[in-house]
Image (tube, rainbow, N blue to C red; front, top):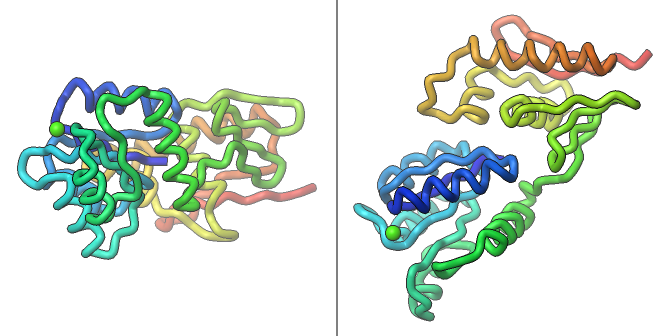
Amino acid sequence: MRILVVEDENNLASALVKLLEGQNYLAEAVHDGQSGLDYALSGQYDAMILDVMLPGLSGFEVASALRKEGLDLPILMLTARDKVTDKVRGLDSGADDYLTKPFTTEELLARVRALLRRQGAVQMDTLTFGDLSLSLDASTLSCQDRQVRLSRKEQEVMRILMSLPPSHIISKDELIMKVWGADSEAVDNNVEAYVSFLRKKLFYLNSAVQIVAQRRLGYSLEYTAC
Ligand code: CA
């Protein structure tokens, strides 16, 4: 799950990113309205935390521009003032929920989870594929009685592969977009490195699931039951 944070207070923005990463979300922060809009329009996020008072475009303007573009990215709006008009305006502009500053981290995380759940982009606790089971809470991949821990990026690559429709192939570019972000420096080599880490772990797990490289197309996940 990839979450975009749009917040101009740098300290708060980095605290939010850290908090979300601690919960195994991938999070990225931008600090003004226009960047928030541009990043959100890239379509690579599952949810957005959007401050109202921003340089450039306000949070209201960002939300309504996104809705006008037909993007249904779930938005949690952060309002500094506990004003009914701000909340109403936020919801009218297309936000799904709002949170008044200051807020507790527990409350923010609960709202984010609710948002993702509502979206159906729900963070299921466990994904299964073939003989594998991926626990998103514990960041572990298991096969029968063996278990390995995954790093955040390994987990995200594995989650994406395990969520692909049957016999679907995902390209390296798409994986880079989803895991590293559109303007990251990541290249094909990064994807290949993570696929190779994951293959070693699958080997250790003695799993019958394989990450198959499809020449020039990308990767798919295959399960050969014996
Ligand atoms: Ca602000």
